[in-house]
Image 1 (tube, rainbow, N blue to C red):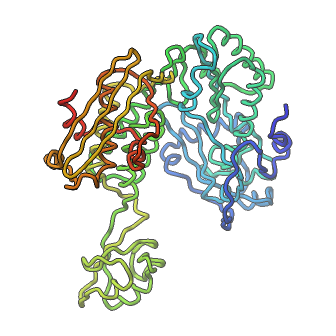
Image 2: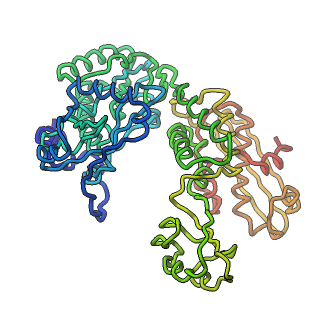
Length: 553
């Protein structure tokens, strides 16, 4: 096959070192920090403790499938059986509204994951990649798709016997160890990623006829002409069965519209639509955040993570997430009091950047906390701290705690959340996969300024030869009346008027071609670099454009 991953199966059989596959992007070299020692944890995460019956049932299911073994002995006995090393992580249960619960073990806390050296970074496709590959080149026929899901993909890779002590957990005073790659281990995703990528490359060769094929973790998506897709789907499934690759048949789909990683993809009409379950989950998170301004870091992270995934094909809606990021990294400040008699020893705990490198004795001041003020006096350097006015009363320090989970939503974030709520509430977001047709017309605009006046002008030439043009002049007073600050010498703001002229042109195109979807190519004919830089991103016509331009249209 001349496949670049020539050592894949030898290394799967050997089960030793994780060498590069020469398929994925290499990770940048960085200084390796000392990996922590392996440790044993006999307690589990709250998700497993809160659902004991579900947890026990899942453990028994994995034992019956041969994935898990119950070790009859103590921790010391395990170290004798696996002298290579023993690590026992914390067990958790991942519970989702859209899929059955499953076991997940935290192997970072016990040192297994930090001791894994994976030198490559795997990239996963998204709905954006599907959109970019639609339609198939030189094919105008109706298209459909095949969706296949590899069953328990991670657990298809077996762990070498002497390494099984590194993937254990404890439950009800019993020790369990995996025979296969479990969820939560860093190397599990890597080994299946290499194996799944090989299968994808192999299926490309087997199918041969024009198609698109994607693999997201363990979900395959095959796109092809609908008239030959059933034959190709039969070939693929029989080929996979010949190699005994297990498939989750209840998830298999063959149709013009299929579900894939949270999206409904219709290849007949060329529409990508967000699944209702994802939309409802996002609306639920928004409602929870809007209930009160005080929230947690974890709650904001949960919402932002899902929002970034949803807005991957809605780039305009992603432009407003920065307000939530600002709140996410704006940790709250807390007041701490210290005895004035120990003031000099407290200063000694500060770094030059006013962060506490060690916790002062007898206080709960967090390590890494940043000092903001002393007795309501803002401080920015150690010199400011030494010059603070003090008294014989207890000294109150305002300290930013980076480890705090508490967060507050700003008014801007609340406004953006309501905007997202309105966007999702009234219709399920969808976008066309069809490429935008180029506009056959021609348009150009320019601006000039002199003294206290400026002028914009431009023209539109449509494909039928019809033309429209505009030319408008304003003074600085027109802008100041709208509370838009400008210089009296308007030449100093020429880049803004150059940009404004392009927006007027775009506004005019949208007015004369309502409801159209086409691409506009902006040629770099401008003599103003700042205007070109400002026009890279499209913004809806703002108050200025809508107010000053409404008379013309």
